[in-house]
Length: 376
Image (tube, rainbow, N blue to C red; front, side):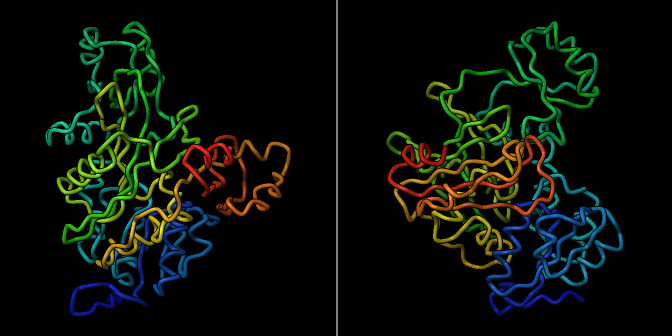
C-alpha cells in the first residue's frame, strides 16, 4: 500500500514518498526540492553513483523495467514522475495501474519519439520545420524531392546532438541513414535561424498552467552552451510564447514540468522539440526565480498550487560546465566563487568526460546580455 498523504483537496502532502525514474542532475534537483519541502523520495536508477541516488531517501539500483523495483515504487510512492523522456512504456504502464504517474505514459510516448511528436504538433496546428519520416528504403528514395540541406535525426534516444547526421544533399542521405543504424528517423530541413528560444512551464492535473520567462539559447555542437532570460522579444512576444506553449501542454494533457524548444525563422516561430521534464535552459530558475523549475515539478505532480515564476532580477544567464573543463585537473573555481553575482552548481558526477554535463554557472546581474558576458 503506498503511503500517499492527501488532504481533502486531493493534494499529496509531506511526508509522502515521491518516486522518480532517472538519477541524473535533473532528478537530483527534484529530490533536493522535495526533501526541502518535507517529502521523502525514491529514485529508480541503474547507476549506483548517480547524482540523484546520492541524495534520495531510497535508491533502487535496478533497470528501469525491473519488475521488483517497479513493484516497490508502486507500493511505497504516492506519485511517480520522471527526469527523462525515454522511460520504457511498459514500465510506465505497469506503474500507472497502481499509482499516479505524472506525466502520463501517453504523453511520454509522444514526446519520446520524434515522428510521433511531430505528427502530434501538426495535428494540433502548431508550426514546425518541414520534415519527412525515414523508415524504409522507399522513404529514402522518395526524399529526392525534399528540400536540402537537411539533418537526419533518429526518432528515438537522440539528445545533445547525438543521433544526428547532416545531409547537404539527397546523395548523402542513404549513407547517413546507414551511419545511424537504419533505425526510424526524421529528415528535417535545415533553416536559417534568427534565434533559438525555450519556455519551461508547469501544468497540474486540473489544467492550471504557469510559464517561466522565455529564455534565449545558444548551442555548440548540439549541446546547450548558454541560456539567458528574459529573451529580448518584441511587443507581445513573451505572452505569445506562453500562450502557444500552454496550448501545447493542454492538448497533450500534460501534468508536470515541460520545456518547449522553438526556432525563430524570419517572422515565424517554429516548435522544434518538447521535453517532458525540467530542462537545461530552465536552470536559471534555481537562482533567479522565487520558485525553481524543480520545486514547480514537485508542486505540479503533487497537485499543489503552482509557485511564482517571475524573475527576481533584471537579467540572468546560465553557462553549462562540460567535462572538457577538467582536462587539466579540477578547474579553479575561485573567480566564480568570488563574484557575488555568480552561483556555482556542480552535479556530483564522479568522472568528467568531454561533452558530459558536470555542472552549470548562473549569473544574476544587470541585463541578460550583461549577465551572459560575465558568465562567459
